[in-house]
Length: 204
Image (cartoon, rainbow, N blue to C red; front, side, top):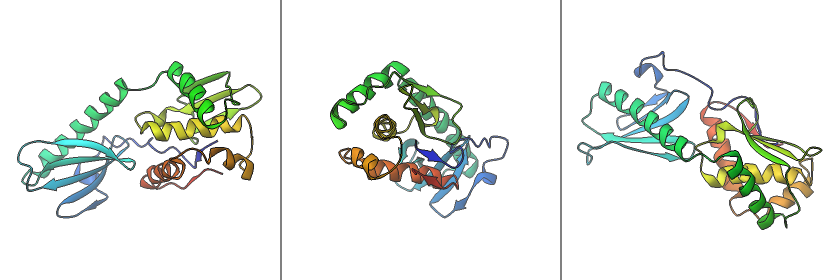
């Protein structure tokens, strides 16, 4: 299983005003948390009117014009967090999608040996990215992974598939994952997400 110590995105902070959310602030960059989402706001003198946002290394980066007031910035940050969440919701994989992806990953990286009986999203995993019950062949992925890059979700899915063949985290288990090209990058991404929320992530 891939386990953080505690929920990564479970903090709800909408009751606080925007300035109170600031973790660090500089002349051009502000780091904050909105509705449990880690946000980095970047001001640009070259940007006149438009506001845009994108995901980067476990946080949402929002680009705003340099002359925008802090009040306007706060409104736009909340708006962009909501827009990105809505967009990611539309792109979410279904349980059926996960099952099909699991079979493809097993075929590509495990020689098709890992065949799960079921693969599904769950909302009650508050301390794990994913879990597996080898005796039942069932795999569960935390819905906190929704909206993360597909290669990160693939890593967690492959991690749990490997547990169908090797229950522990010994050398034989990690050897099964060595063929995944973004193994270390995906692990680093999850560690970054966890660290941004002040948590200690461990795969062990």
